[in-house]
Length: 236
Image (cartoon, rainbow, N blue to C red; front, side, top):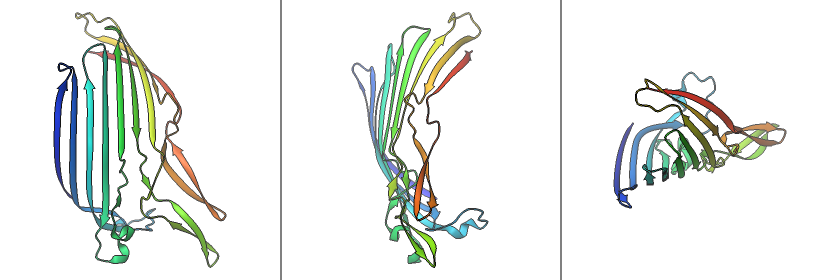
């Protein structure tokens, strides 16, 4: 696998050098990649190479960032518009995925936003909050069912034509530090945090199961509830 990437960026300090800002665009070409043939059944397969097909890829995007790292109030905002596409290049026409047209890669997520905020109340107390958002990853959906010799058959969409729901998560934490005297060997601290404060049931994946004459989808969420935690640290 070989990739050639081209990028150009602009970086600037704003407001008397208190805020860092950057803009970057890139384009990448990828050769000698592989993907699975359409309709492949991969469970318990020993000779998996028989189900693989040669593909090529391309990726491009825009990255924006603003960051403040000094003072009591600190924050960073980063946004990326990133696309990654794949196209099969088999010499056998029937093996080409989506008729040889470009289709989104499994990890193609166009919009990615990360916002972090930190307020330092004193040397011992600080609060932080983080928000993460991204477009859902591509997925191939069953779009119809029919019967052949009384066997229920499923017809699927083009490869990665649809997407699972978007991802969104909000985390908060409070850090309480111990004695910060310089003559101490170690400086203890406690961090109280809540992961996924809003309890968003973000879909990690979507599964499908035959139910009589229909196909039903099931969303799998990982950590779909607020998760509190306490962390005790020693800094040497």
